[in-house]
Length: 111
Image: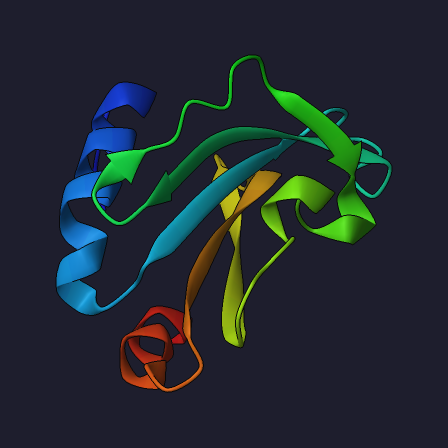
């Protein structure tokens, strides 16, 4: 995906992912790219075609993958986590979620 602004990325994701059968998407950025395993911030969340209002960036331990409140009351699901890079440097990750039965779109993203 090519986009020049984060607002473009958010719009494209919220409009197009449901066409692929992907229900939910999150973007997290590392608080310190020199120590990425410490803490991250959730900077984007969408479910269906709706961008969720997460307020200020939510900080959480990176090893948790997502803040706990986004993991509560989940049915069976699967995540695909992909690194986000800019100029060869990791700065965060993107998480795609779908029901466990909808693996085909996630397999495309993994490739």
